Image (tube, rainbow, N blue to C red; front, top):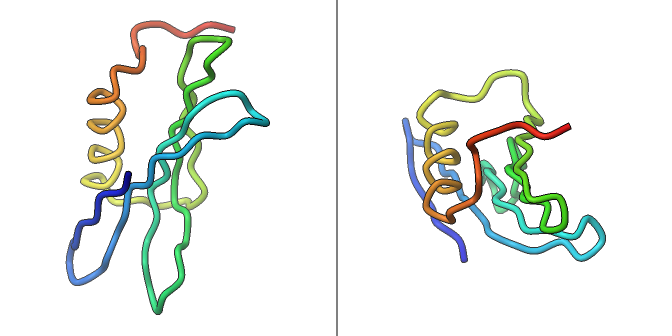
Length: 85
């Protein structure tokens, strides 16, 4: 599954996928430019551990894009109610 959006003339995509090695699923936030996907951030749900980790791969990410990723995590039903260490 993927979802695309245009903000201020730039193209962005949310991509859902699974990662067998890390044992979970992810949502990647990327900017699309000249046919290249540049990953900006990721939310990863660890199946075995039962929690979500957010990773940023850029220093500055516009707030509407962070909220788009956060809302997508909520729609997936991933638990965000507590931190487990």
